[in-house]
Length: 316
Image (cartoon, rainbow, N blue to C red; front, side):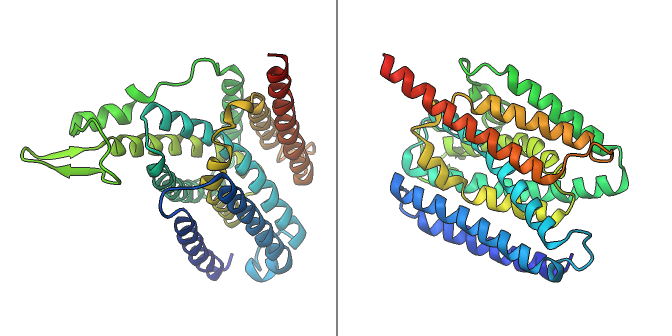
């Protein structure tokens, strides 16, 4: 992979983050505006996929992938990461509710969460790629982890949401600082006559950081089952995360309607785990098949969820 590809994409990522921050200035985001920006980020990812299809050989002259294979791997990885990132939105909504985060502060918190996730995933991708290169057996560890995660997701009880108020980040912040009762704008810390005081914003950021770690542990092994090209893995993650803030404000009032999303994600993680186990065998699952499975599963889950909740609303 050409170093110029990484440098160029790093510059592009900074520009896109700045653009995302600019379009959410003021803290007020309408559903219409968020929907338009969500479509823009999807269009941008598809445009980048077309760029890979046309110029992959110039971007990665030493890659064994053809242009078509690279484009298919990117698209599959992007849709996989996008699907898994929707689960992030449920947790973000839960965190905002439990800590009573004002609506004007939510765009800033989400941006910090996205930036933190990008940095963390970049580090984990570099480590994961090196481990897979040096130790082939790590592939099976990743596969077992995905199967375990999928099983745990099947077992989750949506009726009893997780309580973050007593989580480790909250305990650590409260142990190190006094915590104010109310938010102080965007401030994380402020000072009084006694010393520094943490605002609830610090606790929310700490909890978001923990969720970033947990989500990365799921998504990074999953995408390595699609492709081992670090550049494709990283770029798919970047594009999946960039539209996360806009997507949150589109779906904020609809998240409870996606009742079949968790089982769908559990199936996808289990399927990807099996794909990873079979990668080095004659029964290896082709990437286009994986792409089809992900698209059909998510589409079915969304349509089924909306149909069920609409039917329940009509009957009541």
